[in-house]
Image (cartoon, rainbow, N blue to C red; front, side, top):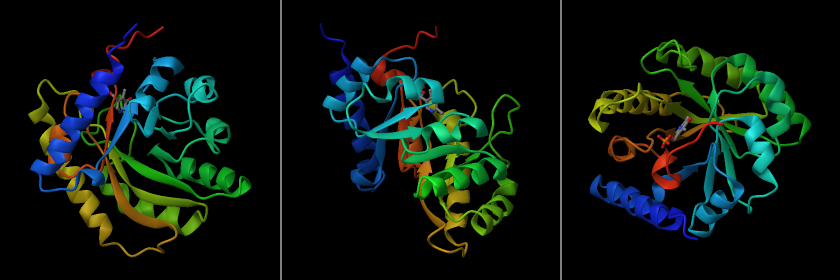
Length: 234
Ligand SMILES: *Cc1c(COP(=O)(O)O)cnc(C)c1O
């Protein structure tokens, strides 16, 4: 039975590439991440067979339940992470997009060190300072970066993730994407040791607004429902 995932993934990939080209960018510089929360390993494997290289999960428990049943792929953690769960995913993900405190970075540092690896992280920015969302204020980015790079030798800051307020139309998100891009460009001028700080990743854009995000400089878009269909939360 066809679930339509193969076709939808292909269409989103085409749209991702076209948005890059029309913005004068190399399509290879923008990664399409398939966000799989609530979806089954079979569905995820279908997306991987269709060409998905990067998978994003929000919750540690869900990632662990699926991990062994999904074909080899690059896993990203994109949801709020509690410090006591870091140890469970440290050897499974290539990047943690949702680092929202120095305390969390310290725990990642400790667990990465124990696992003999260096973990790539993004700092999550709470663009509109919404109470319901995690993430740090843009104004705190410099201080947080300073603290993490000075204390954590097994963590490398690769850039920022932002989630703008829920938009009615894609254009509503543009000012937030612009702001995140400016922050990201400013970050690139900061001088911290390259083994701990290498800002090359701007994680922004979801199903409703990923083309606008690419126009504004996103390097990785996180697309769920446009690939897998609507989510049924159990
Ligand atoms: C669910 C989720 C997405 C994907 O959202 P869609 O609108 O389904 O594309 C992207 N990023 C984060 C952090 C998410 O939680």
